[in-house]
Image (cartoon, rainbow, N blue to C red; front, side, top):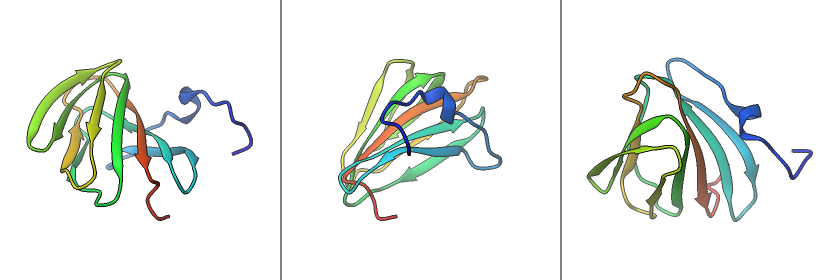
Length: 109
């Protein structure tokens, strides 16, 4: 990374069959990324044993699951998944879902 100032749209993308992921910034203490899910794509429920994680919905709408609880969230909403808590997201809409994702501390590379 050559700049401390970024715009998320420079990192938006698509990938099939899995969702698109881009790293915006990374240190030993924090990973900041962008996840883009096209309609029908999902990131199945999973656990991070040593990291807390958040999703901030930038664009679109997603169905999030945290600790077995499901919630549909749209632009401006924040979803929090503490370490050791199962969480996942699915794009059940007709538009791209763009998420700012943070994990602390950063997972091993």
